Length: 85
Image (cartoon, rainbow, N blue to C red; front, side):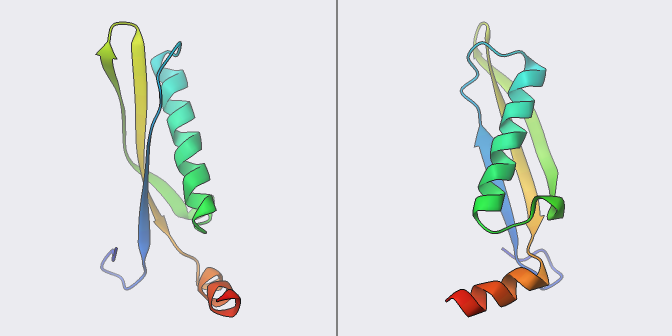
């Protein structure tokens, strides 16, 4: 995905299971897991920002949080990928 500046970006989304959580806990868990997914894919968390977040309540007393991150790759990561490939 290209953000218009020539640098690739990643969107990491996570939807929590929502059991036994309030909205704040659900959003915190979703954000934490989205950042983990971004780091796993090689995107440093300090280069990620929340683009969209919220909660859904599909069933009474069940809150599912979701977070969408926009992340940019650092220049050093490209060099590391080239060497490891």
